[in-house]
Length: 427
Image 1 (cartoon, rainbow, N blue to C red):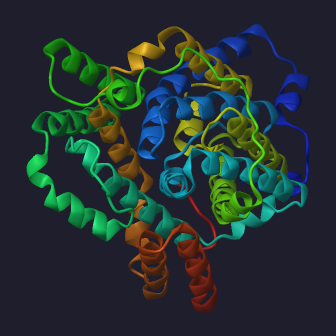
Image 2 (image 1 turned 120 degrees about the horizontal axis):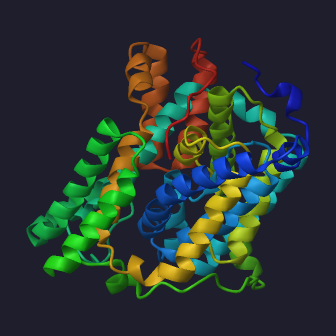
């Protein structure tokens, strides 16, 4: 299988290459069908990621629409689907809590600049050297944090005051409010989790997340059950995209958000290029890593201008795009168009979705993020186990960057063999 080295320095978008090869009506039909399939998957997921990140759900859709369009139009992978990813939930929520929405959007914009520079400096080919054991460890750490972050909505604990951001204090705080749990919300969340997992096993091609969300919403509205909805917390979603906006930040805020922007950049580069590697393995194609980083940078600039979240390549959606029969990046462009159509024509319907249902979707995402087979294999080797557990521990107790740095240093010192590559997890 080609490793991408020979094409990592090319700066030609795959869309141009694909169209230059010839594009006909049959390919368009395949791309239109696969784009619709991915949009059905991205719709509930984008909103759930936004809510879990502490912002209103439409901001997740802005990222999927604007960022997804740019990633497909400019990217170095023929099949990559861009948008908000579960791996960013922790970083986005912390950044928003510290610096507010203005600081969060500024961090997204700065990350876009950094990613463009990384691509221009040809750093894309270096990402493959992140040890596999480190990515497994920090992905498991992110999954654990996401899982804990959804307990509040799963239990129907509305707006807990001063809920701690750290994992252990958060668990202690949630335990003290367990008597206030809403049984209806818990049943909704558990029902969504069960529905998605059963459908995935029995009918892998079925849009399980969307089906579960629709069923939960119909149950809540039809039976008038007491559960908090998207509209109750965030109000009605807007009927379209906002006007692009760029405010001149203060120097103090600019300096303050730089570490968050750097974290967005590192995680975005790793996730997007590893997602592109997954697409390569599934199709036999070779992505252009540095072009992909530049596209991810422009996508984050675009998402930031429209008030969206960080954008990266999304593994589950990219894999779904390939399985649905995508031929060219036109599929990803159409996926963004479908999402925009929903936002314009059916935004009020999203306000009826119970938050417990979105929490259930993210619990499934967190479970799927963990690379269980690799985890079991790595834990059998004491060196790999030490690196993995250290990465996991630093990720959940300090932050993501600390986990990556600690894992890479320990991996270098212990030099476990056969751990230099990675099979990334679903977003």
